[in-house]
Amino acid sequence: MSNQEMMTRMAYRASSNPDYIAYLFELYSSAEKTEWSAIARKLGLDEIRLARVALSRRPRQETFDEDIERIAEYVEVDVTELLSILRHAEALEVFRANSNRTGKRWLMAARDKEDENESDI
Amino acid sequence: MTALLSPLLEQLATKFRQVSRYDYCFPYNIERAILHSFPISIVKLSKPSVQDIQEWLKARGLTIAPIGTPDRPLFGCTVIYRNRGFFFVDGLLDEAEQRFTLAHELAHYLRDYDYPRELAIQKLGPKILEVLDDERVPEDDERVFAILEGVNDRLTLCQS
Image (tube, rainbow over all chains, first blue to last red):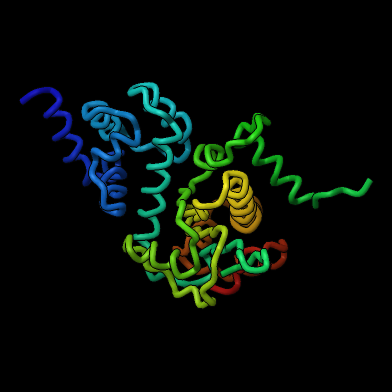
């Protein structure tokens, strides 16, 4: 088995472990009905560099910026593109875990087109 | 000279500039600033309505309480829970209008969600996050303290 194949296999295996970015990639890919290869294209990475990102520990909330910068330097990936996937996956994760919750803890607000109103929805 | 902004809005704008390392370049890349600084995903939809957003969430297995508001076209929309969420924006708007819409949604987040949370933590300590994140109902002393400290209106701590 080549190094690349091994890395890719490990990355897929890590996708069931919430501690790894692979888990967030898998959440994103299943929700958006897209393949990991599409994530790689979005991030401008080849398969092995995508696997390196996927096998990185998930950024910790308290050191989020630092962790993201470190990953970005390690694989030379565009930070903003990486953030767009990670932020999306994290929101999906929280919303899925709390589906059907009701109450005052949600913030829902909108900017209406009609009459240029803004409203709480 | 009359101040154009309320002290709270000035405070929030200052916080945004600090957190996002605002660099005053024009046109400002607010999308980048949001992604870098806040736990929010930006989703661009074509001419979104209230119903489109509900369907978008449903298609991803995200069932939230029925919004219970008339369907209507939107420039943008904010949905936040447990300090994670989405800014939806009409991706067919021109760039300036998208930027304005995102600034509008960010203002909702900062004023109506982030600021009250920060205030509650400051007044009641980090344990109040359990209430704000829907993990438990507030204790009696937290309800009383919230009322006395004047954070009740923003937090709806008494309406769990």
